[in-house]
Length: 158
Image (tube, rainbow, N blue to C red):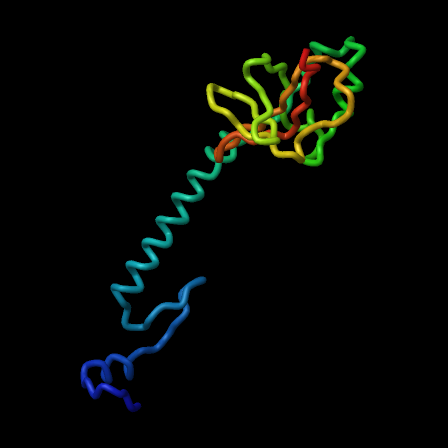
């Protein structure tokens, strides 16, 4: 075996390397602290990710809930049919009315104030059909990554 540097210790190490399988991993026959440390870090990272995943997923779920409050409302079928280009409004978000000071049109786009912060409404989220409820409505989806708007329906602006 020829190495470019001529280091005898390196030659001896390379010449003695052999691989063996142990379960699902391939490891050096002589053992290696460097590879062992890398494997320990990998196992720790995977373990941490698996422990954190349920909390991220649980914290990010924002499922719409129909608790039957509006079952007799004449507008219920209409609300259930509302869709933006981002999907059905009531499928995984609870809509609510927004007071006039908490929404406006800014730079040609709508924005809405949620929890004291202005959130830009994507153009795809705006519902363009006539607003039968009359009030401005928003369907926010809260995830671990922040708030996004699934649907937005401007009010009558009176």
